[in-house]
Length: 211
Ligand SMILES: C[S@@+](CC[C@H](N)C(=O)[O-])C[C@H]1O[C@@H](n2cnc3c(N)ncnc32)[C@H](O)[C@@H]1O
Image (tube, rainbow, N blue to C red):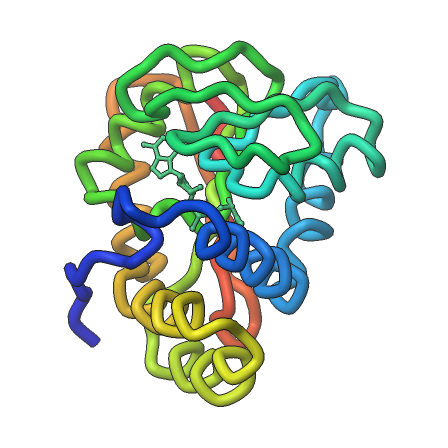
């Protein structure tokens, strides 16, 4: 399956107000179906010393950080190009690819890597490594199986914009091989290492980078 370069509606500057709100609420639902928040928690708990502070890059609604704060008692800070006024966690407005990031024990990002080009993902990983010792990248996988599963089981439950963007997201996503190649390039010449975890049925991948 060839990677799509068609832009997602969510990335257009005009998307704001009630449409953006519906997007964020639908993304919370999608993350629930994918089990994203417990997955990120499980990875973060595998840490010695324990993770005490977390930034979420492209935090959107902020729901992941709200969950982690309640479950793990960690300090949290969201980073987003377009902070959502209704987020219940502190959020700084920044371009996470080009601007300095806040310092934290760990950075996470969910459902964002497929919005970026390979060059942008490489720059993002290097940028996260300047302020965090760990970076978890959670994203979809480009494959006909998750595309069919999303189209049949999840899209009908979403607003029409998120349903269309969701299908496009799977078609824009990186395969685990492509993702690994980007991470390898970003870490070349450094002491950093990574593992990649692919879920059963290919619903998601998690890259766990230690700088
Ligand atoms: C698809 S949403 C994912 C939101 C959230 N992580 C989730 O799982 O629901 C992507 C988010 O990344 C943000 N974003 C995109 N490019 C960014 C960048 N270069 N720096 C910071 N945030 C960015 C967008 O504003 C948007 O909120």
